[in-house]
Image 1: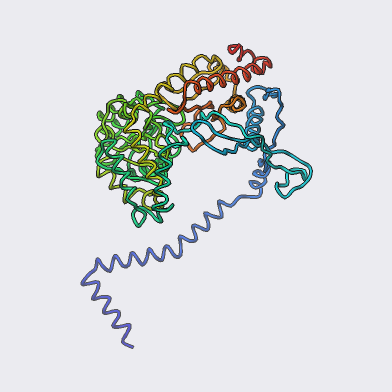
Image 2: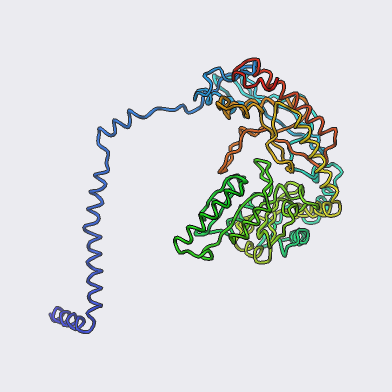
Length: 553
């Protein structure tokens, strides 16, 4: 009976002693009541307003158009005239795309053996037969689609990124070293590097490549692509700033995406546009009163761009980096071993220094060194930070020990025999000289690039854009197929769609190796010449694109 009176007295006493406390609690209780009673009613009212009326539903249904689940696959004629529809129309483009999809399924190449720059292959095609068999899959109309392989043939390999011939030679000491390591350690290393996956050869490789590059330290990743992806994401976080060349390849672009930093792109390999971007950022800082040291800022480029064959102008890039006080990240995956007096890449070629001119450098072991994996070199702070923040290092199983031993053997060969880099340069010059004599094609890559890109010369005169990218891809596919028939493997890149910011143009890609001879280079050039003449002559006679191919006569 005294409880109401006691509670009233307690409450009045509390108001006298601490009125602010009582006020805050009263407001909070009122706010909770508001959330429980009134806000839910308002949300229901808003949801009711957003509900579509019958007339709106009917309008959306009328606008909807069904799409086929499977694209229509047109038949491919043998006369080389792919565009029977109106030039430049949407139907023309879709027709070409459908042929590209069909070709991707039709031509299958099986590699039997790699011996130096020669490879043994068989070419398979999907054949349609009427009877059913347990070896195939049931195709359209109850027929059967299965692969039928032709005869084995030996062809010249002009498509590998084994620039120094380290992994392809049958008598290579690298294979012997790998076998010995495999017998000693077994295959796998059984875990991530930070737990129990580190073996002494991993540490030996890191020490060896750091010494070779003249840096304080190095860190090894088990995969070349994850090396650069993890490297970028380890240093850049949300709130940081990345100024990125729009032409970087997919693994580097993945690292940029994973970082969640603010990204500003500049035109591919254009240092004037890079200056414009950096000046705009500086002007924005001054306008907002923002200090540059408030966020980490990086410029990200490739030393040699995989998708374009362009070499970064390192002199101008480093000058801008120092002028605007940015850190520089360079991926040397395709320039390491191919440029510089001793093969250290584009940094050495331009006389720049690791750690001071370029803070962070990633190098793939899968190209010039003929192994598997990747490394990042730099000072101790750069390397040790990745041992805790590099996702590919912390969470992926470490590389097998024999892979590290193979990279060490390749690095020793490169260090003890620098003439191999000179031989690559001679072969590269011979290839570019030969390609310059083929009037049906134009070279779009830099003279220093061991990844060579050529396009149809007709596209340079295609002012009216009659030749779509899809149709150009078809013609380049024909050229690469005819090169294969002549015993040379080259790559048509037009059908490849990567997760990149700037999609490269359709091209024929060739790669040159130190293992190639003059005879090999001459054979590749002659095969490409005959293939280009054959394909362009068909288009010239058909007049599908008017007089566009008359320049090839």
